[in-house]
Image 1 (spheres, one colour):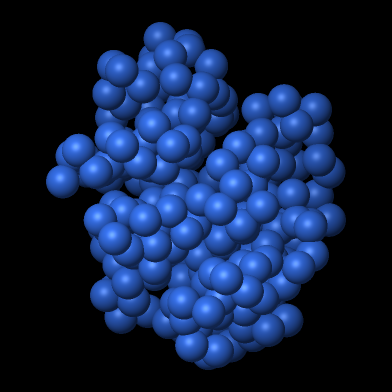
Image 2 (cartoon, rainbow, N blue to C red):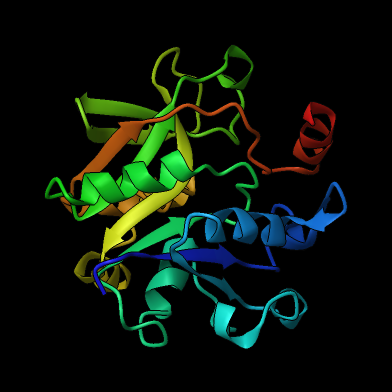
Length: 225
């Protein structure tokens, strides 16, 4: 198919926030909220999880259960290629993005049409997130290409948003790429692409939402409604 599929990796056994996909946001499990927003785009959407308590929120066609201990969401997406075969492009929407927008998804798809095999999005970083290690900072090499990603306070850069696009061959190659020291230290899956010489296309988007990285973010999300 030429239309992309949206993949939502939703790991229950997260070391930083166990059970995060099932966290209730205004009474709705977070992963279900992410799924509903993705389905609203009209693209085929699949939840990829390691846990039956997450899977039971969805019908069998919308969810794939894989108990493999993947290192990150991109590996989980790559592991699902054998089960979700009929697409040339995939959009990875992380399961902690309850405020994901159609624009983010469409911008990732658009970047894939510009000869990028991997794409992502970013926005202006609020000052209060500059020193937060849970917020990922992005530096551009030149317009529409990412140079680097990191968690530390650097005094400049953009706020990286956890949505990625992949052409099928790139996603299939990901598990064979070297896991470097930088990826291990930063705990950022996209560094594996850069250290292996792949370019990541990037587009700016508007974003006034909340990423759910910690229990404190749940409180912030609820208070922002």
